[in-house]
Structures are given as structure tokens and as C-alpha cells.
Length: 230
Image (tube, rainbow, N blue to C red; front, side, top):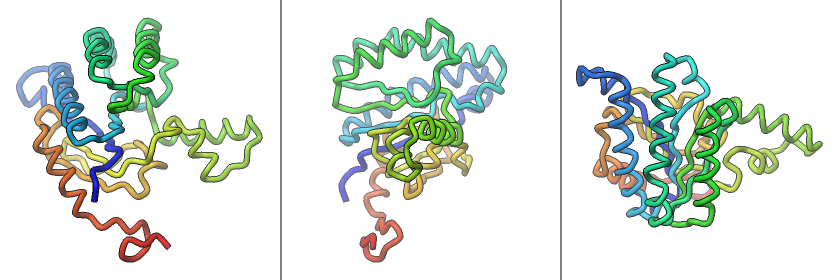
């Protein structure tokens, strides 16, 4: 079996990692950003075309305001510091989710990096921002109703935030938590899920490669027998 085209990751455990190190949750988030850079590099080496990262969920608004603001600051600084690197490495940034509630300055930066990297094709990083799968499905159904388009699987696929993005073959969740937390529910019906005990800042290229290699040994029948889907 070839390498997967699309890997999705729930990057869990940053805050707990920071506290475990007797520092702050924000310290954990900052260290987690270093892991993001390492895993993007690892994905490029594996010739993975789509990497979807669960950056900020619709439920994350329940967190303390200082933590939310710090996450926004990290994202803003990442865009400022990495834009030239993204262009040099031919990396495309795509946002899935609803960024309307975000601060204006951050929204402008997000839209700018999407636009500037639109033609890049080495790998597409899908950043899930203010993303929740239930809300995505509800938004999509409302969109179909407004357009007076029939509600069926094909039309739903063509109106999701992930339109044009293949369903993930692999979903990784770090942080020793065994659930998918409102992430890509529609898209992951046949996704192979790997729950990783390590917290995100400790996750590394070897861990990532091990999961990719394990995936290659899975016989994926999609409800059929011996690899047959019908």
C-alpha cells in the first residue's frame, strides 16, 4: 500500500505538558508549535499531499480568555515568521472552519497567507480554526437549502469546508485521550484512527513514521471483503 494522501491530527496535550513541566499551559502551546514544524517536514518527506491540523475548535472558546488570546498570538506570529518559508517550500495553507469571530488583524493575516500560498502544491496544510464537525454539517445543510440543491452525499461533500480535499486515511490523536472530539465526523467514516499516549510536544518524526508504516499494513476493505468494496 502506498503512503496516505491525507493525514489529520488532533494535537492534544499541549497545556497538560506545560503544567507537567511545572510551567504554564501557554508554555506547552508554544512548544507544541515546534512539533507542528517537525511533523510538516516529516509529512513532506512521506509525500503526503494533505495534512489537517485541529488548531482551534468551536469548543475552545470555553477556555480562559488569556489562553485564547495567547493561541491567537501564536498563530499570528507563526504567519508573520513563516510566510517566506511556506512560499520557499511550496506549502499551501488552507483554512477550514469559521474565522468570522477572530480579531480583525488575525483574520486579515489568515486570508493573506491563504491567498499568497494558493498556487503552492508540495503539500496542503489544512488548518482547522474555530472548527466543529457538527457545525460544519449544519452549515452545509443550510447552504444546500438556500441554493435549493438536493440533500445527498455528493452535494454535501461539495459544500463542506473540506470541499476538494480527500477524506483522511489516517487520524492521529495525541495526549492519551481516545475520542475524536467533533473533528471531521463526516469525513472520517473509514479513517484509520491512531490514539497516541504521548502529549503533542513530545510527539516526533519517528512516532509519525511508525504510524504511517503501520497504516501500510492495514487491509482496508471499506465494508467489503478482501479489499473489494462491493
